Length: 560
Ligand SMILES: [Zn+2]
Image 1: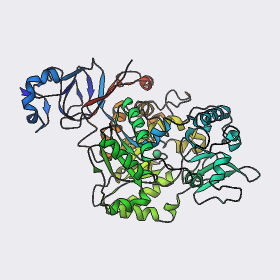
Image 2: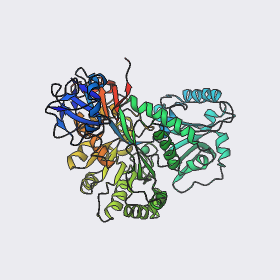
Image 3: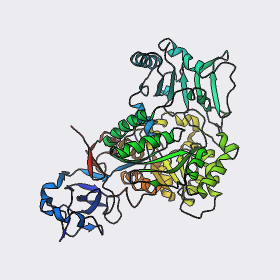
Image 4: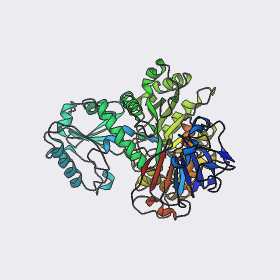
């Protein structure tokens, strides 16, 4: 019998480990911040003794030998009472600091009418006081009937003294009020920039909606958040992550604020408040800042890493800016909006050089043609090392593209919640044949591609359980597809869990540290209220995280 000075023991659980050696277990022993044993409840005893376990070699037992007499008092035994425990969720695509900010900003996501939209902005302006910017929002005009874009006239009267620039939830367009348009210098004479559109009314006046690159007219006059404000946003985001069992995430912020966010994350780490493992990606066109600093992929500490780069190939389906081989079915002249860096060759040059300097690349591609463009760039680069190239969203594919994801070992970084959200309105835009290859989870797994999951928070909710529900059921949010939208692309609970754990760890170059419950791995674990494997799939969305353990410490406990 071995003696392990476990600080925390989880027992009597149904533990899905994600480890092929032992997929299911009842008990876990944690010593410090590592898992040291996984086995049956009988194997892993109450007073820290472990018989016949799977055990990591060279664990920290020795260092704590002297305190063994007190071990029984010190151990925390958590009786799971038959509940499901899984590896701490990993979210492979967030805009995390933005998410933290959003928690304190005006909430427009569920504003179901233009009147409600205006009312909330007006109320928020009153609370904020004159002169302050109103941003964020995450509005969704597809909830409105008819689904027309908002205009500055809708909100001007309630925001005479506040500049407003509120974003659609996909981030590909935003509405400015007249104050903000003026500050951004946008008039009827301002030409559309490359890769962007200033939406205008019949008389040629800007309506206030700015699409893609046109958003920069206003973005650039919004004062940047201070480091203290970013730290506070990070803290708010981390509390939200703990509540949802998220113990690691990729921050795809990708904007020019990425290096400022890095400063905020460093402060959170130093103060001991970084309760998740972060991998921060910076804008690909600024890759030389990383390269000249000597940074390579996945560089950093146990909790904070950098070395990833994020770029864009196209826009979004909702904004009809995704780049497609064929025009949108409801817009026969429109094949989407290719980012300038793709057409002028800067993207290919940046990917090639950054990869040569061992940085990791992730590029946003929604439309089938955008995915093809990026795969072509990836395929043009000699495969001399493990690159783990990523495509973010990989939303509208075809059989040829799916095969190439597998053959090139490109990470398909997808967000299942988008499928049940977009599924409400995507089919008329795509036509049925193209829709079959939309959010093609089943086809990607069957082809042998690496499928990974994330939320795209703030575009969608951070909660991974909603993502699992979406991938398993494909039931659209409007309730119109009870058996699933494109049901042949559904996947199983176990597959979805793997996409939220081990596969994401691989995409972050951390498969030996996180994403599984196995000896030697970091002790990052989520305990759920319900067993996702046995409840009816349509009930998965109601399951909650009861307990989150991060780095061997309980960081969240749900109060019923
Ligand atoms: Zn995103």
